[in-house]
Length: 169
Image (tube, rainbow, N blue to C red; front, side, top):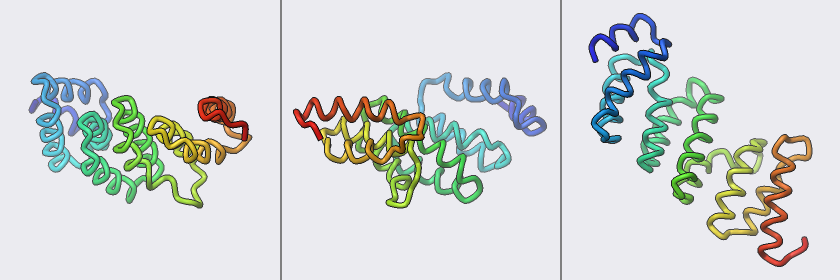
C-alpha cells in the first residue's frame, strides 16, 4: 500500500497504480471497508482526483445515496461537468441494481424545469417507467429534442409505454 501511494504521490494519474491500489483494498471483498480506506487516502492525498470517482461508484454499488450526494456536491463546486457525469453514472449503477427510488433521488438535481439535460430526462423516463409512473415517463421522453441522439430511442420507449397503457396519444 505504501509503495503504491508513493508512486501515486509522484504520478497521480498513473492508472495501473490506481487500479492496483483499488484492487488491494477490494481484495477483502468488503465494499464498505474499501470505501473507508479510500476516504482516508483521499483526506491525506486530495490531489488524487480519481478517488472521488471510485467512491461514487462504490457508494452506488452499496446504495448509499447520502455518501454519493456528499461527493457530488463537493465535486460540483470544482468541476460541475464532471459532477454531472458522475451523477449519471451513479444513476445508471443504481438502476442496474433495480434501486429505482435511490436512482431518482440522485438524478433529481438534474431535472429542474429549466434543465436541458437530455440524458437526465432519458434516465428519468426509464426510471419512471420501471416504477410504473407511466405518465411521468412519457413526459420525460417528450422533453428530449428532435435534434438529440437520444430522440429515436426516446420515441421507441414512449411508443412502448403507450402500447402498454393501450393509449395512442
